[in-house]
Length: 416
Image (cartoon, rainbow, N blue to C red; front, side, top):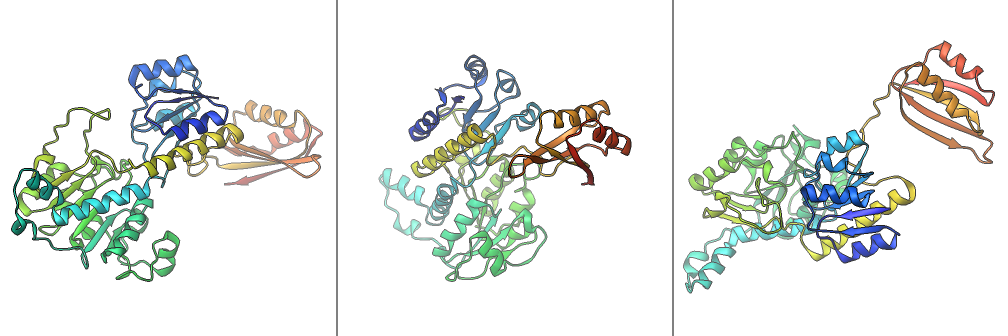
C-alpha cells in the first residue's frame, strides 16, 4: 500500500506506517500542482494531510482510495469530490481535544489577567502594577460554550477546577432551556460531584451569549455553522465580556467582533482566523489582531507534542484498519442512512455464481444495488445475502431469480 504524507508528521507515525508494510512518501512541502503530480507518480492509495488543501483534481491523479486528515476538522478537503470518486475521508476526532482545551483555558486566563500586556510592558522597561492589578478573576463567572463535542467537554473538566459556572448551547439540544441531567452529564463524561453548579443548557447561541462572562466557540465548520457568531450573538455579550475562538475563524463575524471590541470593551482570544497563510509561516495582516483587547495565537490549538503523537497513532490505526480489513474508522463521507428503499434477502447455498445470477437479474431490470452484505453460516454450507435496492423487485422478477438458480433456498423483500 502506497501512502503519501503531505504535511509535517510525527516520526512515530511514519515509523508506524512503514511497520505496516506501507511504501511511505514523506513530502511535507507538497501542495497544489506539485502534490497532484506526486500522487500520480507515486500511485498513492492513501494521502495523509494536516492543513494542506485537497482539491478535486488531486483525487483524479491516481488510484487514491483514502484521505486521512490528521486532525479533527476536514474543511480543507473537497469532501463532495471525494464522495463522487468513492474516496474515504477519515479524521482523528478527539485526539487533540486536551491540547485545544488547554489553550482555551490559557487564553481565558490571559484575557482576565492581561498576561501578554504585562509581558510587553516589562520588556519595554515599564513597571505598572497599578494598571495590571485590575482583574476580575474567574471564580463564579459564567463560561458559555458553543458546542458540546470532545474539546468542549475537556474544557468543562478544566473549568470546574477554576470554579467557573458552565452553560452550553449545542445543536443536539437546540431550543432547550434546562439543566443537563445527571445521566446526560455522565454519558458525555462531564459529570463531576465537585462542580460548582450543574451545567445549564441555553436554547440559542444568542441567549447563551447574553448569560456569559466568557463565550468560547467549539463548533465544527459546516454550511450551517459558518458565521454563527454573528452581530446578534456578539451584540448579546455583556460589556467587558470575553470571546474565545479555538475552532475555525469562519465561525465568527470578525467585523462585528472588532466593532464590539472598540465600542463595548469586549475582549477576544483568537487562535484561528478566516484568512490564514497557507503555510506554517508567512505574512499576516488581519487588522483585528492590532486592536487592544485582542490576543491572537498562530492556530496552535492542537500543536502540542502529546496531541501530535496521539494523532499520529490514530492515523496509523486508520490506515491499518483499511489495509487489513477494508474498513475505515472515523469516516465523514458515508451516507448516514442508506438511500435504498427496499432490501432483498437471499438465503442460498454457498456456491459459486449464486449472487452473480441475482445481480444479473437485477441489472436486466435496471434496479440498482445500493449496498450488499453476504453472511456465511457455520460449516460454510449456506449463506444469507442482504441486498439494498433503489426500488422493489416485482413478483415476476423474483420468480425469475428463483427459477434461474437451484442453489437459491428462499427470497424475501422488505421495505426500508
